[in-house]
Length: 322
Image 1 (cartoon, rainbow, N blue to C red):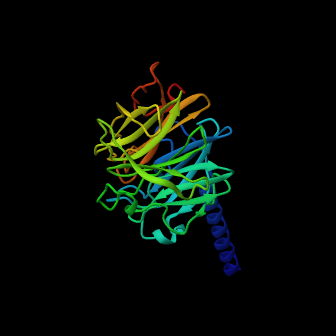
Image 2 (cartoon, rainbow, N blue to C red; image 1 turned 90 degrees about the horizontal axis):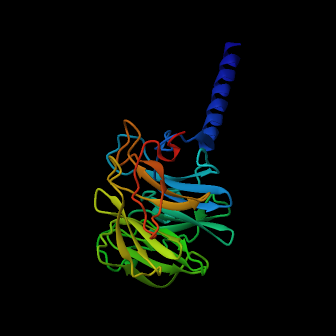
């Protein structure tokens, strides 16, 4: 009887553990302040809106106390009201890119086109890849079997980590663009299939442009906004132009150094008639750091002339007054 009872207990524990694992990978939670996700470390946010849902895509830092960046998969979350969030099962891992298994799951960007979802990722050493899925939550699979872009495409750079931080923008004429880089901001057109570069690779330059990484392009009232990380530790700066290729005019610092995180990385999105500035810091106490970061959200406001009001980072974030 003892043997049978022991087996039953072991089986129960195994089933419970398996159920908990499934639950943890498809988990509903309430955001109450910044950081919005407190049960794991998230970084390098990207976001888009489809129908009435905001989809948030992040990197995934290892637990606190790290001495360097350790990131092996990407995460996806969704919300309809910015309060109740759902984490979906892990949609993509660095090992899904056979050509990049020695790299890390650095910053990415997801974009929908023609009913498909394309996840552009950076791997630090081996270039920018692209994965594809039938649903925003995935699962995603490598669309090319090789990098879309490598250091060889970064003609104005010499260091080995320049081919990172892809950001995608589809204009009103249905032309898709990709921006990326570290130290130099590159851009190019994408073909309609979203997995090939169309034409010449160019770089952005203008007076006052001190580009580190993390480009992001959005459009409002006919103006293009280029936001990007500048300096180190990083702040977020921005510039404006009447054409996506420029010339851009520098407008200043948008977001200051994010606490104890040397990096900053932003996503900007219009959702339910409000603009949101999504970023990361090292704010989870006491183990948050430059290598164990956390996603935060603030509302973003425009001035009458189209310039953006500086972002004030707060603990309550968009949940102020609740």
